[in-house]
Image (cartoon, rainbow, N blue to C red; front, top):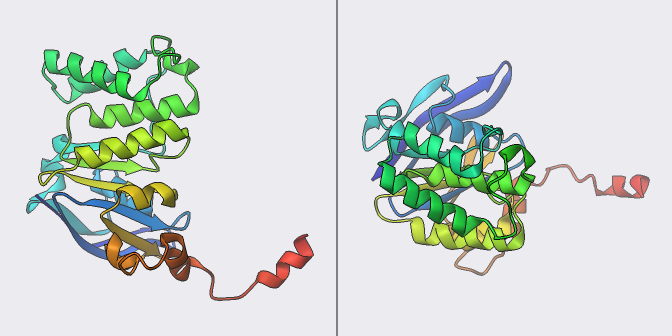
Length: 247
């Protein structure tokens, strides 16, 4: 499997969010997008999911347009809206029907996903409107996985998850990835990125400044991921003297 992104560009008014981004991802890769807030990470994920049209460029899966492959894509969006009148089970059943998951398979996967992500003290039979932010995040992740997508897109999946849930997420991702699947994650949580990523992309001012393996980024493990990332993201101007005015 191969995901091909060719000269992808997107701007909002005068703001260039993505500038001729090109990269190729292969099956078995967990690709983590890093960058400042507003760097274009979510925009790139939403273009891959075919929710946003690029101004130019293309996205293909195995040389086929993304529009022909939406059924093999699973998306957990940072701004995902769930149907809050439903229970968790009802919502996953609804999503599974949309993806035409066979009935018995849907029941089995719904039960397994909810049992894996949710603790016994979490009332998943209640309406989603009563869920905490973390519970809604876990449900969104479950809905992205319900149809066993070959392209899994996760936008800030670790945000609002407690430590046990984040560790479960890492465990699942490492087992879920295979040669016929690709996972793309945007995240600021470098602890978990370091645990799951095989490859990294760093977006700075609309450009892909780094695109290689995690091992290459960390110089074969001799440099910490946060130290290396700061070299790409820190401002050129030294403004540390302003701290003394603030404190």
